[in-house]
Each structure stands twice: as C-alpha cells, then as structure tokens.
Length: 153
Image (cartoon, rainbow, N blue to C red):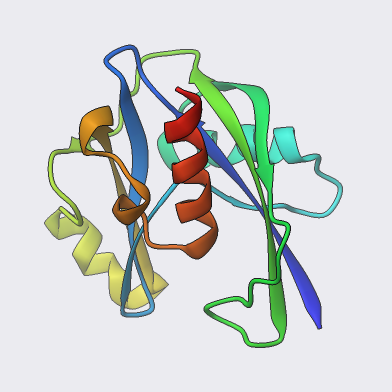
C-alpha cells in the first residue's frame, strides 16, 4: 500500500463564490477544489502555493486548516494507493488572470487538442454560494469538506 498526499485550497471570493476546478482526466470528468500532489521535500502549505501558481499563475496566502482525511479512501486511479487529503482556506493575493468559465467543463479548443498528449485538461470557475453544495463536487473527500465549509460560513 502506498500513500498519496494531496493538498487543496478553498478560495471564497468577496462575492461569496467558491472556486472549483473542472477536470477531464483519463476519460473521466471531475469537479474538485484546486490543488494537487505533495512533492518530496515540500510542506503542505508550500505545496498549495506551488499548485495555485502552476495551475492558475496565482499567488495565494494559505490560511486556516479545514480538514485532513480521517478515513480510508482508495485512489480512483491506482488501487494500491490510499489518498490522504489536506484542505486549507486560501486567499488570492492578486487578480485572477486565467480564463474563468461560466459553466462546467467548458474547455476551449486548444485544451481539447492537447488532451490526447497529456490525458488531462482543466479549467476553473466560481460557483455562487447559494448554488454550492456537496453535490457540486465529485470526489468523496471534497464532498465532506464542502459540507463542512457550508456549515462554517
């Protein structure tokens, strides 16, 4: 058994909207919170800063810890891996410059062309607080966190 450590950021803007990432990975669609895998020699907060910079060219401040997985979750991509996910609130330190979509999985033509090479594409969008729920996100751990942040705010 191997462990995969993932770190995710919950970004809620001033308009009370939650940032999500729509991803098409190996033929499957996922709506999840932005973030990614912890690299060797990296702390969880540094990982999250790196992931936001890589995926959105966005500097973020990592805030309060929200949740760390406290149950067994098998990886959707490798049956030999157990997922441990860590969630933090994040705050954008600059204006978001990547395209923000208005509907789920609204990939542009350039993204779709590179999919065959990389087997993964993603785009981001905000969901209004009143439309946000655990049903908005795909991954089991994200659903728990979505419910948690709804009861906190």
